[in-house]
Length: 546
Image 1: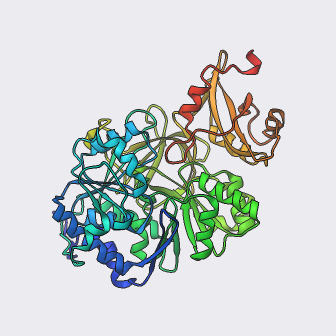
Image 2 (image 1 turned 90 degrees about the vertical axis):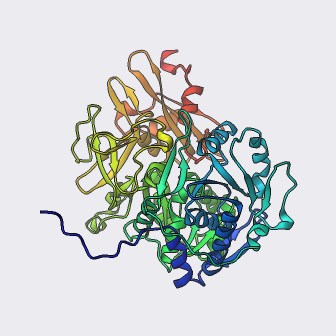
Image 3 (image 1 turned 45 degrees about the vertical axis):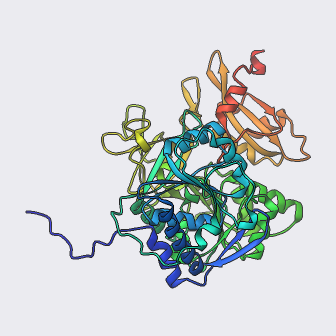
């Protein structure tokens, strides 16, 4: 017998409906931006919605057509938010570009995406001037500022954002189209090979926003004042520019000012209740707090992701500042949320130390994301919290392939996406990344997870930042090397740090040596660039071998 069809309206899930809803039901809720020149700009959802409609009309007048890619090179701001919604709303694709990438990568990305227009913050005009001679299809560049702030430039076909939209009506009839239409495009950081594009849909974005707003995930709600620290050019700021309007949360954009002092000032002045950022950002905030003896205002909870949060960071935020930490994990290819560290009800009755052990994991599975771990032959491994293997995922907001089929077929025969992470899963659904597959240290036929060793080292008061990599060993193939940035004023020694590992990890896992450096190399998204470290220490000889 044929399946019985429902009698429910087939209304498509479209991004334009999010900002439309926010304007109608939360129109007076504030959107605050710290501008490039450090001024505070205030507006509301209602006003942003009007301006978004003006921009939609302006895009059509410029000749933008459905399916065109529209690039942005911009900080987090109210204007960037307007571009998010106007481009996707008219049926174009919002392509956020990470300005921290190398020039060659930026040229590759813009040409590969075939961007028709670029929206650029004034502070990036000089950068675009460097790129312009190599850009193949860009028809115009819109500088996101007032007319009086327009910089002098050698760029052709340049428009002032405010002048561009001012001549257009603040009413626009949003088109209705298939919810599987492409809405936005983000490229991976490309630490190995060229960056690859992840093409999201309206459907995937709206579903992801619902998930991000749920209490067991980021829990963004109307009562929140959200500080959007994660760059809007990185995995759509973890989906928060879509989730916040869905609930009517106040949004606060820090612009380019991401130092500890500037962020703390916003946290205090704007009554921030929640935020999300990578560990390096929270490290800067904690260092500033330690120096000034200040607090974190009414901040209630933060999400930490992008790379593993050091356990000492989780404990410090919770015990010293009363801020609940949600350890999260995801990927650009996952829109990006995959797991969040909200503790289950039964876990809340556990002793504090056992709760911390759970929080140190990357979180538990959220509805919409299936997970499993497999060995190198593709055989599924047990969910016992001990066995670790290659992490596979699938779900309605997870990539099925890369833009223009770069990288070929990425899914296996059952539709699972290989994350490139090595992880454990336990019976309660908690997942813990033990390493990136490319970062696992293979010693004597066994695997050593660098993340666990880094977490131990970060508990030492003399360590500001660290990384563990594998270096060559004639007998064991590889052995771990700990690379450390000392805390300011610290004189911690190699001997002290190696002794610190005793009893905290398996003895044969303890690094063979410690090297102190002034700073670690980072990717454009704030992760430690281990490929660079491995290259720098490729010829390193361990003391036991010299």
